[in-house]
Length: 115
Length: 112
Image 1: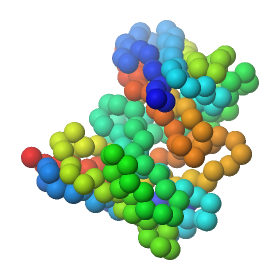
Image 2: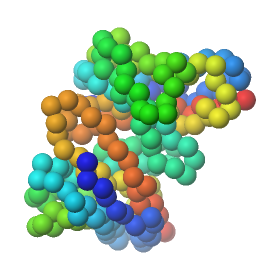
Image 3: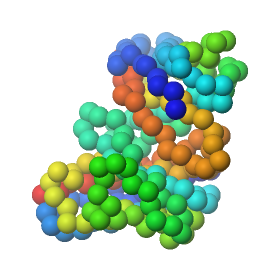
């Protein structure tokens, strides 16, 4: 149990276009989901916390108008990278909690390449 | 959340036990120790967690010192598939869900 599905796994887009990444909790309800970004040879950096039915909370330095997060249901959160630029190329990972003591389940990640 | 310190890299021979240390000397009484690992180009995978007692599951064992200032993750029979970055994370349980904060972790390389 406790599976988080992330789609797509890889995407290549042209500079200036937008890309949507989906994160679904398949067998549990996730009131809170988290979005991370990971550059090569670096650790995961939290971008935002997404709560179902409310606005996401963004970390300092993350542009909320560029990285649009929607968490419309207990099983789905989406991250849209708007007007993507090559510097947005990264590995994006979502996670959801099953209950705090039990830890967090992560999606398999999305490799975004902006050309 | 308490800060953790891990060695940047370790090697282990296939079939042998891998012992990954983590120092968390400023841990508070209500903070748990979590271990995750990240295989290259995948999302992190939960391994194990504990508060103060030693824990064991099908993946690993977690040994927490009596003063809780350090812990060791043990993979009893490492395989090549265990090559990954291992993260030790300390965090408290609060009323609302909070993120996991990742440090730099330990790159474990299992050698054939």
